[in-house]
Length: 254
Image (cartoon, rainbow, N blue to C red; front, side, top):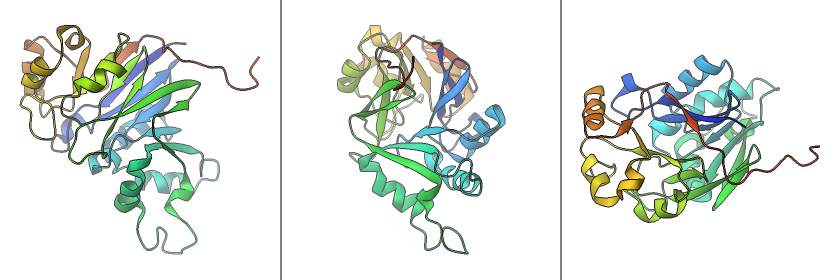
């Protein structure tokens, strides 16, 4: 198994030239799991892979992370070969927020007869989930309200924080086996996002050497963070990953 993490977009809501933050886990050169689905991210995904994602994990429900789901609904619903087949993984605490933000409209189709979730296979979760024979841990992060944002860890391989303040207590557990850690970071932190000074204050040196920073405000900020000694992801970068700790063969496989 060969795994890599492609950074389809590395920017925030106010930096569209960098693309909305999105990662795609690739397995043997093919997309396995899309992480977040902002409008720009969906466009980038379709342009690169030529078809819709077969699975999406949602970190939180800000529109630069879920704004592409409405367009994805239309792409899936009107194609019977895709309708109801795309897995949408979301922490159970996010399901009401997803419903409120993207699905709670009087008629998703003017003709009626369709529910928003008919286009997807929604998979609510808590501790984590199995996907493509791999176990993914899910953990709470610090972004706006409690229980509104959740990171993702493929043990032994990578961690994706999503938008967050520093979470040393979580990374001490979910990034404890040498994982590459894709971490939200701008040059200057604020109550919703991490800054460079936060990294140096909150994380040990060994962990900082494994960070790959994304969700920054500008190319100038990215260059400054590189001069501070950090690895900073660029748009469409594809990072090679180590093999995960927990892998199973599909049921019935020989």
